[in-house]
Each structure stands twice: as structure tokens, then as C-alpha cells.
Length: 227
Image 1 (tube, rainbow, N blue to C red):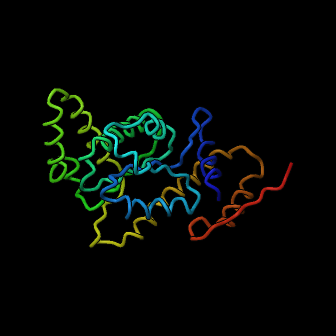
Image 2 (cartoon, rainbow, N blue to C red):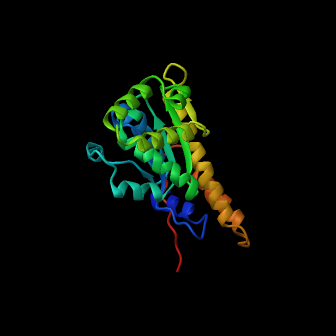
Image 3 (cartoon, one colour):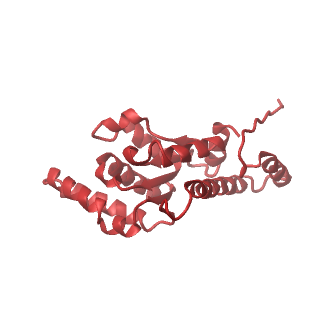
């Protein structure tokens, strides 16, 4: 399935909303860019799930770019990888704030992954999250509203259904497989809703999905022949 094809399946779910990306990945590059996030990104792309992952050079800036905010707005799903140093990045916290806003206003589905961190640490801003906010507080003495906005975003995301992963508990590949299956199932459901009322289409869709074998590995090429 091509990346464009997967994105088109998603965009058809609503006449008033057209998604550009299927998934937006929010993560702290230092923690997971070359490990978990990379493996997840590859797994999503392999199955034709159009995924936005920021360029490594972008993280060198201090403020989130308009292009990145636009990418969040144009994404159907957001996967937030909450790792040990996630809250140390004002970039990540601004991303998360925008993601929560889109969840409330633009029908975005947000899926958190607690990567080697305890959800309670995120909820109560303890451990490395407490350290990060202590440093932010020192730098932003005159902007307490910003701090409260970030804290509220973390409190929101921790209440969402997601995954809690520690390396000693479960293989990384198993968690990634679970995540990909959830996204695929949600995209498939979106497609089935969009076909309601089309006479004779359901059997054809089921046949096409069986040929795609979307839950297995490998690459498929689809040729469409017609006027």
C-alpha cells in the first residue's frame, strides 16, 4: 500500500477534514530517535502509514516552527513517546500542548507511550519530570502561565489509553507490533465507514484487504487499471 493511499483512506472519514499525515510522532530525540522511535517509524512506513517525524536538525532551534505546528494540525493520529528527558525539551512540551489542542478541536486521536518512565511520574511531574520543570521555572520566572499550560498538557495525556513499556518487561518489537496494529485497525475502520451506502462495495473492499495482508511484513504493489 502506498503512503499516499493510506493517507487518502484516512482523509475520507470526514467531508470537513482532510488529513495530510496519518501519524505524527512526538518524541525527545536524545532518548529515542535512533532506537524506539526509529523502529516504530520504519514499521509504520513499511505498512504504508504516512508518518511525520521531524528532521533532527529542527530540534536545534529553541522554539517550535510554524511548519511543525502545521504538520500536527494535518495529522489524524499523534503518538507521544514520553521518555525520561521528554519534559526537559520546551520543544516537546510545546508540541504536546498543540497535540492536546488538536485532540479537543480537530478530532485527533492521541496515543501515549510511557517509555521507561512511570505514568505517575508524568502525572505528578516527579523524577526527571520534576527536575525538568524546576529548570524551566528558573528560566521562565515571569511566565508562569506557560509552565501551567505544559503541566496541564502532561496531565491530559497521562489520562489517555496507551502503552507502558520497560525493557525488562517486554520486547520492544512486541510493543511496536501492538501499536501498528491499533493504527491499522483504526484506519481500516475509517475506510469502512466511508464506504457506507455504496452498493456492492463491501465485498470488494474485503477482498482487497485480504490481498494486502496488512498485518504481515513485506511490500505490496497495487496497480489500478481503468479510465
